[in-house]
Image (cartoon, rainbow, N blue to C red; front, top):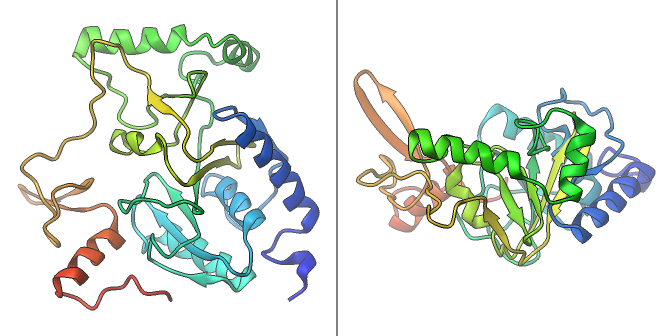
Length: 285
């Protein structure tokens, strides 16, 4: 394989993205513009995350791709197969085995480790868009750490409904400075951003922005001091497949009956494997 085009992208493109990543890591939570390339998938289907992954990929890496926790969705399968076809790197379903994990809308249930990289596919990188549409004002607000409009939004929700109605993309503060959009992960995953041992990278191809959370970085949700941050609760419910009751669950309706299953399919399979119920599909492809 020609090293100049290893993993689809040419070396000049990779160097530009790597320089952007270095700046993003040096300024946690700050969104850095980059020259987003055309990729063989439609914008909005993970081009930002894909460009980051391909720019960092080495032949010794092991790649895992998930879509809302699932290894077998159309988006996850196509991106994983594309990455493997242009690089020859090893594929896996195992969170523990992967060196690079590309994700859409979830953080794996298994705890991440030092040396791992979690790459988020991001549709909307600017956290202030919902309260301030003017991009120049957004930049000034970030520079001044002026997030008063976000606080007002949270206050209005709390005063009217008792809590914020934001179900995903909940704003987080990084190292007591920049407030950023964590991508459309559920509230359940927000605490996992804090002090994570893995490097967290966020790429928005359509919006041409990259940002990052370095390992062991302080990340906290915006919240009022007298109001605890609440995540989704699944009290009294458990996975109908593996029996887990301490994970994020997806609801499946069957007529008038609601069934619940692990959002993270690899975690579910690993529990069944430990129980001896299945041979497991966490082995490398």
